[in-house]
Picture 1 (tube, helix red, strand yellow):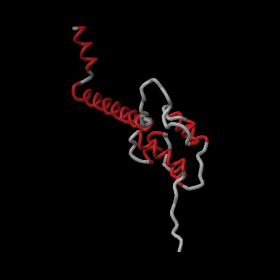
Picture 2 (cartoon, rainbow, N blue to C red; picture 1 turned 180 degrees about the vertical axis):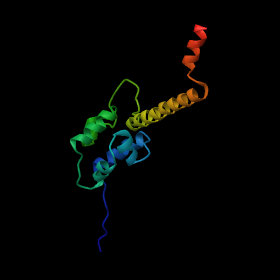
Picture 3 (cartoon, rainbow, N blue to C red; picture 1 turned 120 degrees about the vertical axis):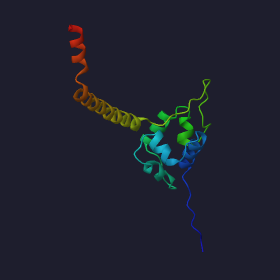
Length: 137
């Protein structure tokens, strides 16, 4: 009886090395937080034995992880990191979702301030009107 074992693709092993090197939490975080994908499906499909990455995936990884040697990423030849004299900069997760949430909260905050001003006018009267009366008096 022959036992079936699932082999990971050689390319996916290189992705795993990048994830380990940059101490990224997992494949999902790598795909969603760093590459900006909606899910990790594009990366997870590369686990299969005879799979190869699309140009889009190669381009996205090369653009986000500028210190990764593109030849190593594509072929496995050479060193993982580019030979550089500058200090390595660790990529950061995409912040698109955070910007959206920030503006959403900002809109709610602005609306709440307007409600407070309206309520204050009802209770005390318009502060601008009071200032004008005091200046005229």
